[in-house]
Length: 521
Image (tube, rainbow, N blue to C red; front, top):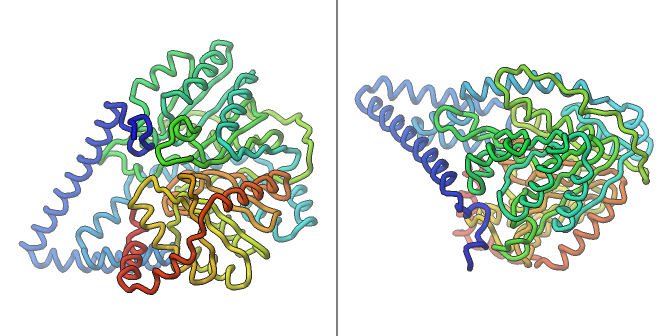
């Protein structure tokens, strides 16, 4: 296989970036080993310290047990802390209680209070949806109440089943920009796909259009080097880096910006599963056909996408001096071509509300005829697994599409460990045979669908900043349905294989151990 066909995770063409992430990893590893050896030595030298560590570990385990977390996550942490008190306690505190993380929670709470003031409650639209379907309205009401993102009408949606079409549509809309362009992506690759976008952004900045772009440092580390930001700024493009990888200083490193958003003039917005890198647009195909999807929304609902962009953009300034720029939240004058309800929303790990997971859970529990998912990774809590299993047992057609060809072999093995239990309950597992399925979508009963950035895995549901769009009775729901049908035709149903694997005790034990450690990955 040629070098140009390497995956996102294996592309280290930018030597400086690779060196930086390697040094960061080694620094964290060495510091962790030093602390472990130090405390292990103290425990062996002074018995009272060993007893104190054990008591502290048990106390912390009980504290974890009392937290509002899914049982599978709590169980994994408790077992690690009781089996290896020194390592378990240190690892848990490093992940959960860093001063930087506490500071970030306060900062996000303040920022969210400010930006959510610019989102209307749209109670009249919610009431109209309620008259149409009470179950759909209950979903919309939950999102409005706990993430503060309202449901909208007067919005048109275009579904992109192929990312090549999405890229061309995106560039066409960028060329029309007159006031501002905001772009937020987990990964940007300074290569062919982005080159065409960069050319447009540079030209628009020269015309006086405000162009802002920012990316996650870890997500883009194998794609670009530190001079990328300087190059953007030289071209008149405001550029920021989300959550720089600074080992031992930045304890916020575990929380990444996994969102994918473009907003243009407050009139049109794009989101979906694809990053701005070559493999997402079939310019390289390291693992066969890379399946992804996205949506373009035009109209009133774009305001929610702009507010979502503001959240992380403002959070990157430590002094908190930036104010909400109302001039970039214009009143919509758009007249939609169809009737329907659209609800862009965002989820973030700095609060206690698991919006991303709960939106999926509400769809599963509310499904009457069918509920279908496509996800690159399937690493879920016992609660979600039980919800999927119960839906299948009550007669709902529950199907999940996962990749046939993985991008990460270890994570793929963990994904497969969750399948036998689901299959036993009647859930159908399909493996996408043309290549790697990176899309993150679900659909139920032909009435509701979600397209966005949220995988069915712990990192998306608990650790990352994510976003999605819920569609209620829109024509795009039908397009997503037809795309699912096409994916099923191209996939292989592997339910029988997973059902047989449950008969082998060795495989059951291996899968159990993988599921046990999966919340810690």
